[in-house]
Image (cartoon, rainbow, N blue to C red; front, side):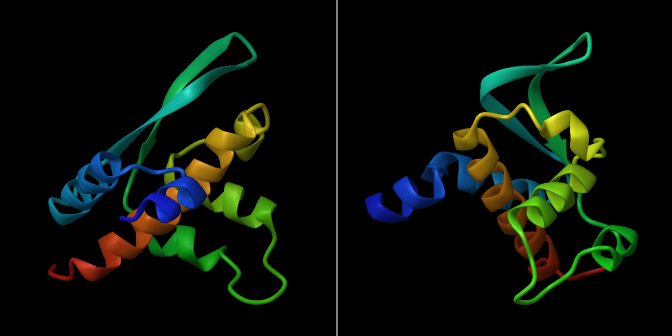
Length: 114
């Protein structure tokens, strides 16, 4: 990854490699928040991405009408979380989250196999 890509995407090369390895092995990926948040009495320090299911993808809208909120909702589904629980995310973590969800989803789809 180039430095300019890192600064736009907010994901460093080590983190991307960990995502690639998790997707390749069909394992969950733990996304560590840089700025932990609270949701009710729960402190959220990390989110665990699971490979998306057809149910996750079925509710995802592709196209020009897609919003940032749609991407956050999709990422929340991949983490088995209520989308409302992510409303307190710092914008940096939010941007990293939607990029990570896209990468993890795309990487998982490219692994093929049963």
